[in-house]
Amino acid sequence: MFIIGLITGILYLAATAWLGFNLFNAKIVQDKPNKSILSIGFLALFFHIIILFSDTITSDGLNPSFVNSLSLVSWLVVLLYLVAELRKPVETLGVLLFPTAGLAVLLQLFWPGESNLNNMSFELEVHVLLSLLAYGLLAIAAGQSILLLIQTRYLKKKQPGGFIRSLPALQSMETLLFQMIKVGFILLTLALLSGFIFLDNIFAQHLVHKTVLSIIAWLLFAILLWGRWHFGWRGKKAIHFTLGGFIFLMLSYFGSKIVLEIILQKV
Image (cartoon, rainbow, N blue to C red; front, side):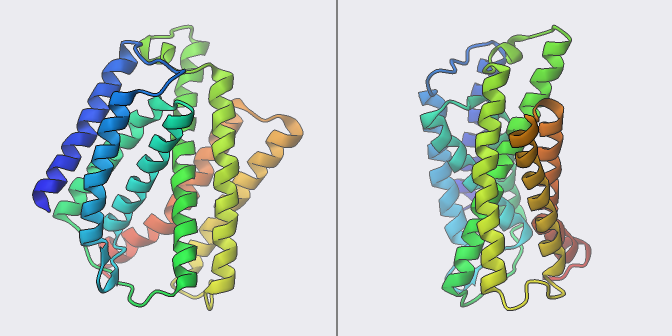
């Protein structure tokens, strides 16, 4: 698995380097997908999932340790990104997503951790799947909002370098951002509802922080979509709400993992 992990990390790094070179030299064509990036990305995903089945999805059940969970979510995020790239080029997001996935794979090789959940029920699996899909899509939206923030600042300074020239028009970037937020919000709503329905006590001591932080994230995205619908919110306000909602969503899961597994050394 170590060799496969290194190959996966190298592929993610190669995709990042190739994409970065094209971006900063304004060689991105936004009206069609980049076949080279897609090929490298899907090949990296193939090797990545071999590692996931070895370390995360075991015969004894799931091993959702902090690093394994980060690796699984990063795999899902890159998958959603590449699928989106097939339909509507969002190539620039790869600059943020590929290196994150590569780092997650390398961390998994050297620091997998253990946290087995045995005999997970079908209902709980549905809840976990919805949560991961929501997190993955909203993570891409957060990456899109960061690019949108950079693009806005450079355009205001009237300094559109090669990187900025390679991005789609500002209005197209915002439209794509809200499309991802809408779908991610629906998935997050379903994830929360499934938690309330399927989990015995979603406000139990070991779950209350996750639940509260997830609800805060849900409220922020709900306010953003309401503001967009009623007042046409865009620009910095949309970016700040998106990043704020994602930070709370990230803390709801990974924050608790860090405290329990790293700070308290408790699984």
